[in-house]
Image 1 (cartoon, rainbow, N blue to C red):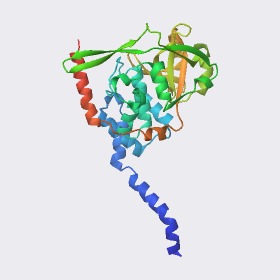
Image 2 (image 1 turned 60 degrees about the vertical axis):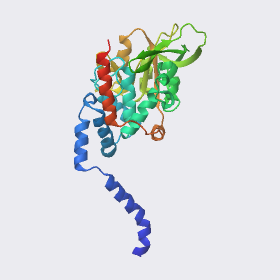
Image 3 (image 1 turned 120 degrees about the horizontal axis):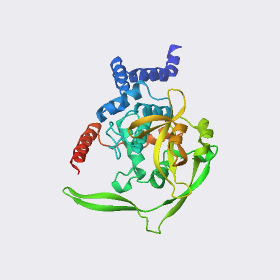
Image 4 (image 1 turned 180 degrees about the vertical axis):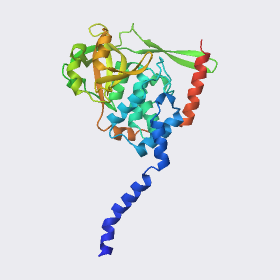
Length: 315
């Protein structure tokens, strides 16, 4: 009788043993708690790599939205710096802060975090300067909706549409002591080679009516100039503040902070409205397919140090 029962029980036994082997040790859980208690602005990339691996083992997020929102909360207090270094966690601008939270929330180790970060920043994840998403509406929005995000704005109450123009980008090669450096000069405002696109947005007067449809981890794009020269000049993430209010976590001078969404809009009369994006339901599967051939965390820390030294030498 027992001999016949063993084959049926064996898969379950092996599964239990596998789970047991994967369980964190007391030391690992203690280390995870120590790292989790710290703000991201105190992290090096080596420490972040350790945190992500231990989080995956000790307390993985229940879903992508929860992971993203929690990382947005942990970034509060990072000093604002325009054109912040992507992998220097003691500074942030609005794009860097958002991309970090999304990548951290979806990742399970350093390699997946770095791969997601590169794909968010560059079209198709090809990491070359001219392939960067320089324009939010012209590049960042369509390139990231191609693989990870969906635009939920059209389904929200009060949605309207606006038109914006996509123009070619201009670059210049500048000689330096190390060779040639390519510089982005902005967009070509003289050419007739343009593309007209139509997007949905929630006008400022209708935002309060859409709050109940928003979830933690949703992405907010701030739209201005509708009816004239529409564009997007700021972004953030939907979170709930300590009072449960629907809020925006974003990087703006002097530091990353959380503001109730309607109060944030009221502060800036130039805001025409907002767009909202959501991480796709299959995001976990999508990011698991990204290539993981990335620089190590230690190598990235060395790169950050070099970038800081270079920056201090610039006039």
